[in-house]
Length: 324
Image (cartoon, rainbow, N blue to C red; front, side):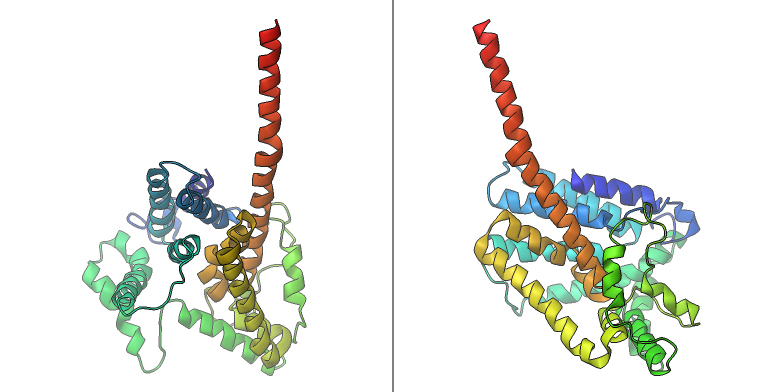
């Protein structure tokens, strides 16, 4: 249900697929996705079904799982022009397969061809989402996707280049005294950004928008290193990413050894937002964490309080009926 709801919101939000309209163009005609946590709902829905099915809690789950994956990953993400969350979902499922079976996933040589093919596909898809609707041949799309990688003046590799630009922009703004160190302000504003913009229009804006105010070009969000450098300088860039990596590792091993529902819901936020949190901004992890905790307690309420109450009421009705 969560995957279907998320897919519906994305499809309605983006409008036409990239087969008929260019990505993020006026022709797509979408209404926009109102809630930033929409993707977390879909990914956690797929993760929940996968883990529950693998553990035997849901019978004949594979058909529903494959259907949910196709609608969410292929239709609502890839065909709408999105890549990051589709890749994070697939990567998360691979990690969860190992966690459920208590098998560590190491690196093996036969992974290399798979990774190369996946990289080529998603890199080309980044160009295809703008070109497919205009009838550009696949061969030209693939060529264009890799043309600038060997350029001498500016190297372009998918999301890496625009994200590196946000970091260099931030360093330049700080070193030229155009902006001052924030000393944790952007992290404090995470709390103020919890309510959706539709409910709190005056909440602090994403710092990714500040670059255009100073006449700088950037794309792809506000990179983790850019945010820590803006707050704490070089020292922060050396320490904060280590703390985040520690939390990711801790949640992974907690789920691996504990195998409890709570342990999985602490791991889900990092897997669901892995690429978006790594490349775009760390706030994505925080927002996904809030969504997962809310869903966890919702599930607990349904299973431990609501369903027993319904069963008790139903059994009471049966007893009364028999007495009469």
